[in-house]
Structure formats: C-alpha cells, structure tokens
Length: 189
Image (cartoon, rainbow, N blue to C red; front, side, top):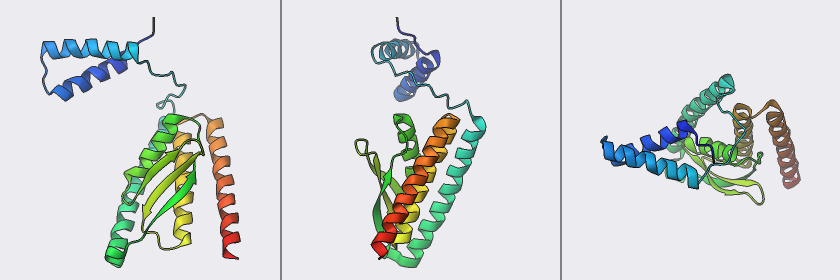
C-alpha cells in the first residue's frame, strides 16, 4: 500500500474546508475521505529535497525576494513617471538551469512575483524561459534581465538543493552569461 503523508492529508482537508467555508462534521468527514482518495489514486512523486533542510538559505532567498519586490516596484514607478505611456517592454530568452520541475516552477514564480516582469513561457524541450519585462530601453537592460533571471535561478537552487546542485547551477549560469556576452560582442561589431 502507498504511504500517505499525514501533513499533506491535513493540508488537503483544510483546503477543502476553506473552499466550502463551513466547519461542520459532514463537510470535514467528506474532506478526509476525499483527501485519502486523492492521495491514494494520485500519488505525488517522491522528491529528495527538503526545503526546510537549509533554513538560512531559505531565509536568504526570502530576503532577496522582498528586496527584489521593493526594488522592482520603485524601478517600475520611476519608469512610469519618467516615460509615461511610452514605457518599453521586451521578451528575453533565458536558459533554464535546473532539471527539476519544482525548482523551475519555484524560480519562475519568484521571478513573476515582482512588478514589471513575469515568465511568459517555459520551454522545457529547449530549456528556455521567455521573460516579459517592462522598462527595457536598451540592449544593456535586456542583458541585465537575462543575468538577473539566471542569478535568481541559482539562488533558488542554493535554497532548495544540495551544495553540488547549487555549484552545477552556478557554473551553468556563468556559462550562459559568457555565451550572452560573446553574442553581444558579435552583434556590436
């Protein structure tokens, strides 16, 4: 028989109760039965990452996200006041550094939290994010968005993964930045 996670069972029951907006016995019992059925018939894959295994790394990521939210909001407000309705946007292709779905999704969600940018599409086959960003006025702005998205992926990998996985992500990010710099030099000639 499959192992059922008690914490996930409780979470699903709580979500069920919040969706119904009532706390009565019949709704709770049906929620427990439904949660058991969901966990039994649709088991989640076992993942090897314990996101709470590195609390300081997770705190560092959370502080970075808060700082990025504030900085993005100020930057977007400044661009809006400075350029009005002529604020320019761009779609920037950024390599995906991880092979793990929940890391890719977590990093994409963190990037999309801030105002003025979001992950428009994740191309798993070619390992590319397409990031839509406001306030892009030059090639330098596009390059900064590219490099910031790579750095964010490294931070998420550092918070969730092992030291080896973080080193791999960091080296992949540096390779991607070097390829981008070489491409920029070729285009400027």
